[in-house]
Each structure stands twice: as structure tokens, then as C-alpha cells.
Image 1 (spheres, rainbow, N blue to C red):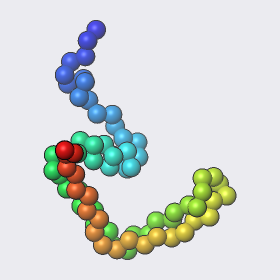
Image 2 (image 1 turned 180 degrees about the horizontal axis):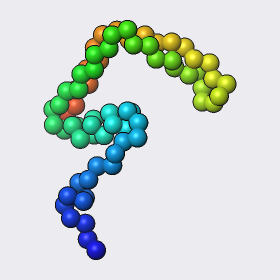
Image 3 (image 1 turned 120 degrees about the horizontal axis):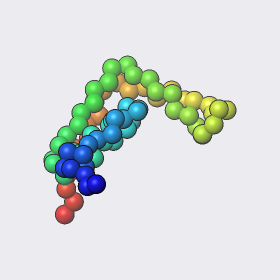
Length: 73
């Protein structure tokens, strides 16, 4: 049984926000798109290693992160 075009283009439901962001970025690459994130007093706990015994360092973000995509020559 062959896939229809709609089935071939079907996007899997992301299970985490990072999967959603990566999927969006991949679809926009090459379309001269821009993704803009705005943060206000956001804090991220960044681990120093993988594992339950990892120590975390707080990173604070207050501003704008802009990601621009373009095709490679």
C-alpha cells in the first residue's frame, strides 16, 4: 500500500517544546524566515552534567532572541 501525499507530509505530534521548536525551524529553513522569541525574567536551570547528581546553574534571560534562516549557496 503506498502513502498518499497527505500521509507523507503528516507531521508527528511533538512531545516536548524543544521538538516543536526544532520541527518549526526545519520547516522554515530555506524560506528566509525569522523566528523571534521574547523573554521577560526567564530563568533556566542548566545542569553541569547528565545524571541525577548534576549541579544546576541558573541562567537568566530578559530580552529577545532572533533566529534567521536562509538557504546555503
